[in-house]
Image (tube, rainbow, N blue to C red; front, side, top):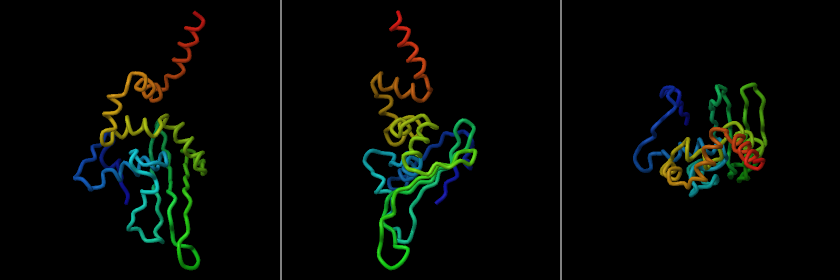
Length: 175
């Protein structure tokens, strides 16, 4: 299934609504899994992202094209799952994998390297992303209810102000 959010306009703010079971969480999971290799909520694991109705020969993957800082990136990721063997009968384990393509065409292909690169590009952890970008099913409430120190850390990461905190700490120490 392909979802083209650009077709909804360039405002960048979308409301995903629908009845229970309509697939809202599936959209959140797809975006979050593509970026971070994890589901969007704490109650689901990556192993749960393959449909139980998928045939053994059907591949399971997600590909997300996203823009950040005026540049376009593409990340493709698959969870670990059982798939049909290439030769013979039966199934075998398909290892989890990821690939990130930078705007200049450079490709990063190892899981941990993709995880690190996405974090560096976006500047947020999965938890922070869920709180401030996805605002999925109660996550925004957690941001609002977070204590001051936690909110400061989230906003510091979002706006890249850690350097100013370090400078402030140095000036305090010198004083």
